[in-house]
Length: 337
Image (cartoon, rainbow, N blue to C red; front, side, top):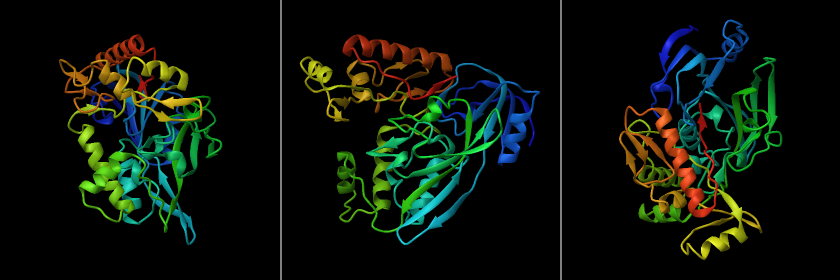
């Protein structure tokens, strides 16, 4: 393990923002991570996983630690379920494909989500009616101050919509090193609630859906809507879908008759942020070398050479405009650094 100086982070964030880390090190096991955290010569540290949920707006005058701990193993299993542990540095989509190759069900709807396994629980990643918490059992995490490893159960994590304990009271206090999932071996429960999945399965002439077929459908849908970060810098969905009261939604309906919603509870609904942003006129809008993607208004993009601060200012303009038009505050999903 070597500590390098003045390293570009362009290849370590999916936005492709070219800022520099004053100090940089990549760790491949927990012992290396512990030693770096204990190193008093570098008091300021930033932990990087897959770099998919962040927008870097400036050079990092600190030690940037890239968590590159790999490995997938079966912890336990019975006739119906298998308990799989994946280390933090595993690419999320590649891990999902590994599960599908072994006919383990539960994560297929989460195919092609950018990032690594270690950062997935932080925002309780979700897509097409499924969230990480649905299969999550526990995770191991290293306390940054005490350097002790703690196991967080599902209840400990306080999962909510794109939320967890790691975004609240435990924020910046722990580094997740591995995650355990409970996945089905037989009688897979297929989640096809979203119409787009059914339409895609029909388009692919799938008569008897499997978890593998659903994954392929999800991949096709995502590829049609979302840009590949390897081709156009982005961080996936930049904003969360806001949750508002049914009373407020009915009031909005009087002015915006086509406004869509998804029920959350007896008193609340979720409104697609993408629809709000598109209706506000931002979809496909380009500002030089950055802008809003043409196929998905939720996605802000770096066409090449953009500054993170430019994209951040665009996000604030979008938030301000959406609030002015709809009286709805939309929050960012990504971390601004």
